[in-house]
Image (cartoon, rainbow, N blue to C red):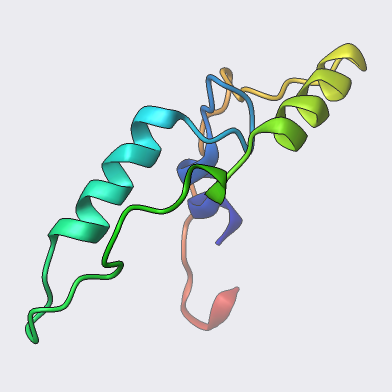
Length: 88
């Protein structure tokens, strides 16, 4: 399962946990503009500018990078997982 989760996280060019403003705007556009079967949207208006901050993620990435750790996952490659009946 973590192999699949990691595919959603890596690579992360801006650093792990950093929200990319263009992707945030895309999410807001979809959430405010896509209606469900009842005609409602996930959110009714764009969130306030203070709805997210990269301050803590950027600080954490800076410390981790200074410690020699990779926070972008640029070398990540998922492993091949073989599922066996019964989990063996």
